[in-house]
Each structure stands twice: as structure tokens, then as C-alpha cells.
Image (tube, rainbow, N blue to C red; front, side, top):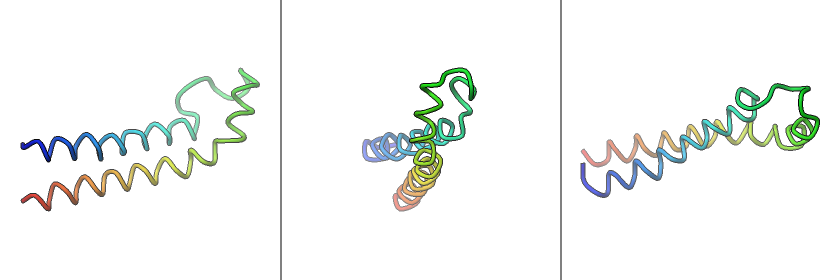
Length: 74
């Protein structure tokens, strides 16, 4: 593994990890469940759709770039 490969894993793997976290937050799989914190419920009504759509997009794009970069090195 050379330094360019490590850089790609950090950049694109990080993008995929952020996408996974966004997806989990968007579907409320992490954090408090609905109905316990009214402020969090209001925030989720405003931003939840963004996280539900942006999270999988970041996950797929990051994983795709990572796979493409790994196979372009061979």
C-alpha cells in the first residue's frame, strides 16, 4: 500500500462513513427515539429528509470512488 492508496482510503472511506452516519441519523436509528425530546423532533422534521436522501448518496458515491480508485491502481 503506497501513500496515494492510503490517501484515497481516508478520503473516500471517510465519505462513505459520513454517508452511513447521515443515513442512520435520517432514519433515527441513533440518538433518542421520537417523542422524548421535542426540540430534536422539530429538528428532525426540518432536516430528516435531507439526511435520509443525502446519506445514501454519500455512501454510494464514496464507496464507488474507493472501488474505482483501488481497481485503477492495479
